[in-house]
Length: 242
Length: 242
DNA sequence: TGAAGTTGTCTATTAGCATAGACAACTTGA
DNA sequence: TCAAGTTGTCTATGCTAATAGACAACTTCA
Image (cartoon, rainbow over all chains, first blue to last red; front, side, top):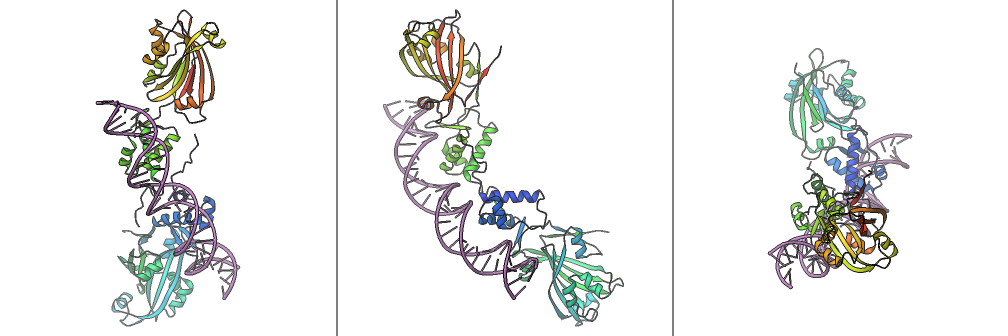
């Protein structure tokens, strides 16, 4: 009576996928952490790299991991809890969740105030503005793309400053503003457009949370108004009633 | 995010095999019971008959089921507990186990006593004997092949009698012996020879328990001496110390 | 800027899985 | 003895799994 391999009839890629999933579930790979390379996984399971790729593909389809070409495959982070209150700082929220907040400038340009922007910022229509397009990440995971408008008179060269400090908090601190608070927040949802989807590494047709917000300094003077698009599958907003 | 079939990466035959094994474990098919035909199983699982055959083959290899050509596939019985004591009756032991004892004559012939046989039966060397080759089963499962020798003088036409009664107990009762008891029992083991293997439905190279025994009547007079070959994988002898 | 390392994609080959049909070999029960 | 039903075996076909190699596309870091 020959002893049967316990896994006969179960595809290799399935065994590999189950193994990786178990490892993640057991916490042997933390959320956001980089998995070993496909070659290395192939060696540990003693299978072909293509077999590993198939296993990872199924995990990616289920949202457990995310592959980044040229970089590696990462354990998908849990949906980030994003509280909305008067003190809302991306870096603090992400840091409190155990992740490293990162930011990167996509584009900075001059703009002029539409009527809506002018009203939000307490300026006149047509006032000169600086428009900053930025991507914000937790570890390696893109969280949101935000378009910020600031007064070009009050924050000259804001684009260049942001490029170096990569943080809105640090940007305004550069201009002597040590504190600010959220003045208004409006939330809606939409389907990511092509450029946002690309930047957020989202599949086509996926939803984003669209947040229009304005921050003011301690004197109540508007500093910046933003339109941020959050990857809906990666965050959940917590509204604290007070 | 398309929902993945829970069984993707698991071969169909494996799923069928697991399903049948679970059904047996849950008692939905009793030991010794006949499974539905391969065609019927194929329909319930909605797979090809050959896929069912593969599933059954793996279960058979593990000893959970046994296929009988032309008849059906049966759930393998548990190893039969076969107590060895002075009152040892195949039919009683098998019946006590909840199975139907069956016997069938393979061959009956005249023989003469070797010195060993003569000693066992209390006869002289060269005395005329009847030799009965019989197969004994529990339900449909072959348990043992036994070669029995009886005195041709005391039990004339024993072969024909056995052919009709199919039981050693009934055979000797036919000659007026209402009771008998085990006088000696010796146990050893061997590999089944080709003919025994075929009769016991054993794979080549499988072991048999070889039991040499002699029964005597209430007066202590030897009745029959036998050499039985039990399928080792289907029985376990219980030696009761008293 | 370049080298090393990563994932993505392509072609190709071999083995196993699953299906289908036909018929043989055998058992069972009428 | 026969018909129906069963398991066993054969051929054939298409699809999936798994392996192998090569190179492209991209990121990271020195």
